[in-house]
Length: 79
Image (cartoon, rainbow, N blue to C red; front, side):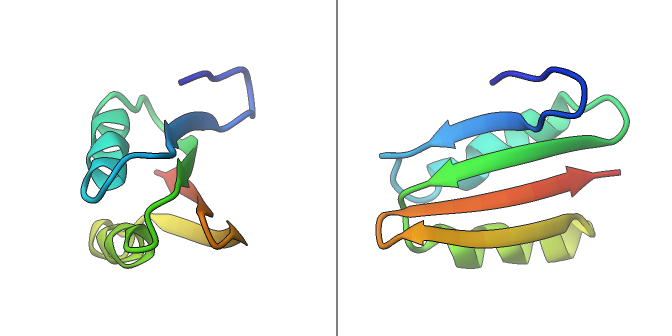
């Protein structure tokens, strides 16, 4: 995970099976200080349901982008 100024913190969950992408996001959010942006990269097609549902419950902003059949990106902002 990296962060410089307005650059989102990268959470690389590529190759990780469900539920690891969501668990990695939760761990990163616990470390948040103030407003943070995260870019979660996942190869698990089920992560879209898990991540978007979690963000709705936690009232986090989440933008989803399908890069390919095997790569999904989620830009998440915590407040």
